Length: 501
Image 1: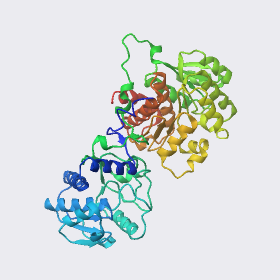
Image 2 (image 1 turned 135 degrees about the horizontal axis):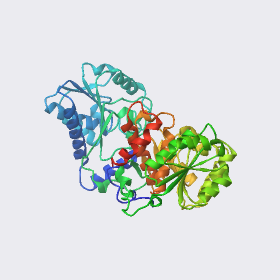
Image 3 (image 1 turned 45 degrees about the horizontal axis):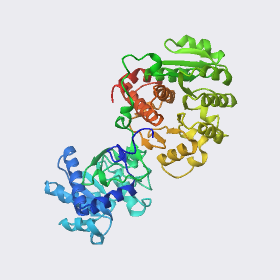
């Protein structure tokens, strides 16, 4: 096991649960003695609390759907009116047709219930979206779709119950139409759709409220999906012993491209050094030696013209982590170097050209990875590279975290699918990252991430933890660098990022 996702954190606050698992948690809490009506009352109370913290008294329209989200909406309406707010309720269906706890909540509302149409928005200055929750079963269309479009054309803020209507709680994808909320209040645990794009953007601010579903009610069954956070892997960063030397912190090697294609390797190398590797060497073709030497000071340089020369460089077992791919070139020469890296036994990060070079022979790469299951391997594709390497998986309509998990199983590696909602997947769990700012969408940013992960592997951080921490540190460095950042800025903010958890 890489790190303790399956025990200490399995029911912790960073665990994400699917809509199906949320249904199980609800059922477990009710079976343990908490009535469903009490859970619904607590949910409505939590939403009202968050509303009162953010807005002054104003006309509110609570929009109720046919299920328990609608029931939550009726509770919100009753409690807001008790606070003196002018509240109207409009429902998609006749409130008398509601069932169970939702019916009971509707009966406790003694005001009128309007028919929900686009015109019902009227003079409301705050909208509560209690239409559909995270377990949405089909795309929103018809009158529901018309209402959602009208809500989004309205300039007033929306508070979503559980998740904005139209967002799939498992995948974060829009199903037909989807509400754009200013605030989303969910319950017990967040769902993957709260973190995956575009769901994360449409949720606005997301608050997770306790409503009486305890840790013991959270299902321990797979899938094991987590919000990427330092609480999950921070314990892997042991203090450097006072008697440590540079080799204690590991020696990372970054493989450079040829003449004119050296900058990416230097970005990765500097990131590995800033992340805490004790030594970093760039293995460079002869054509690029002079260019690399002109830019390097604390980073060492060794010639490595081809795969055989690279194998000779890596014969020194103190070189315990390798990054290859950024601007390495696409084709047979890079494939041979990747095989040499894998044969060396060093932990490695394969990125960019190292992945695309196997687009026509992915099983060859996967077989080479699986020859030594003890050797850490991390693959860091963006969506295009993922499609080239995992063609069939990329065409499946599953969520990003499901595709990443399937790719990790197929390849035998840790897989980092980069993007605004980067997903890190391995046998011990799946993590969804949410701290990366949009400013990271700049040339060379991915090369820095490759170097960060290589530096952590050099420090002997376990591979899933190294990948997850690397993605988080990359995002934190981007936030510290701020608007206008370029890739060269990121390494200098890594010490600050390392100190931030």
